Structures are given as structure tokens and as C-alpha cells.
Length: 233
Image (cartoon, rainbow, N blue to C red; front, side, top):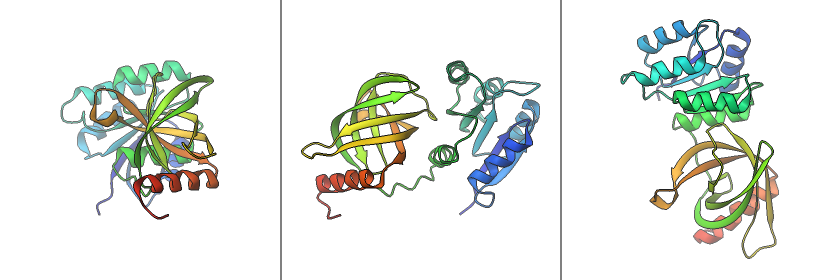
């Protein structure tokens, strides 16, 4: 299979090499750029599948580059993840206004970067069986707590309806009970990696991938899902 082509844009060589190392230098084809102008030149000349874009550079900001890419019909389809060292809420607002597809923050989490890139490139191996369900849950994100509803569940993640705005790249904790069992499941870290409509309707849910969950909790969720689907675990 042909390798996916990723452009990494950062004016600091350390972060370029860090991202290449985290993603696997032999897994993808990488192009790099240190300025916004250079990035736009490579966007126009290379056949790219994804862009990892530093928020702050000397000549242009990441959102400015993102806005230019998304404004061109020939490049608007390329997923863009902004990599930021700035204040979270402001960075998320500027990224969303520019049309980015996700945002992650420095220091970069390897697991979060990997799952985001795989999801945006369509390479995420969904090895877990998934069941439609309706389970109340509690969400904690950046110190804010709220409730939500899990509409789809697997041992590796969940599709959740929640009343706070979340972007791809956000991380949160999620807690829920498995119905008709004594199991209370706590996921220390889950990452927003996709968005989808709830049961084909108008309401949009966020797809969470579990990054930090105790193995026995993950096993309990997987066994529960399999029992709903009529599979032997």
C-alpha cells in the first residue's frame, strides 16, 4: 500500500523530528517546512494527505496558513491539525475559525498524535466490536464537568452526545456504569478523534478513543459489548 504523505510545518527542528519519530519515520512519507510561505509552496506542489501545522511562526500564523489552504478548492480537502504552544481556549477558537480539522498542544502526547493522524488518514484499525446503546456518563474536560450520553460503545472507545463544544484533539475523562452489572468504568484519558451523527439524525456526537483505561475495565466493557451483540468473548 502506498504510504500516506504528511507535511510537518514548524520553525523548530526539534518538534519536526519529534513528530516524525512519534509517527514512525518508515510508516509515512514526510515533507517538512519551517515557514508559512514554504508550507504553502509545498501544499501547492506536493500531493499531501495531511498537514501538521505549528501555530506560531515568524512569517505567518498556523491559522493564516490553514485559512489559505482551506480557501483553495484544490487543497481544501487536506486535513490540517494545528500544533500549538499557546493558550488553549484562544488557540482552539482561532483554529476553529480557520477551519482546522483538529488541534493538539505542546508538549505533544505521542499516543494522541498517533490516534489523531490515523483517524484523519482512515488508518485506524477498529479491532473492537461496537454496540449501539444509551448509557448516561460523566465527562470532565479541562476542569469542567458535565453529563452526556453514550450512544455507541466498544472496549476501545465511545460515541458520546455531550453539551460542551469539543474539537478533535481534546482530551477528557469519562465515567459510566455498565447497565445490569456492578461495574463502574473510569477512563482516565479519552481523546476526541472523530465526529459523527447520532443514529443517522441531526445531532452530532464526538468519538472518543480510550487512551488511559485499566485493562480490567477495558476487558469488562468488551465483554459487555460482546454479550449485547451475542458473541462469545
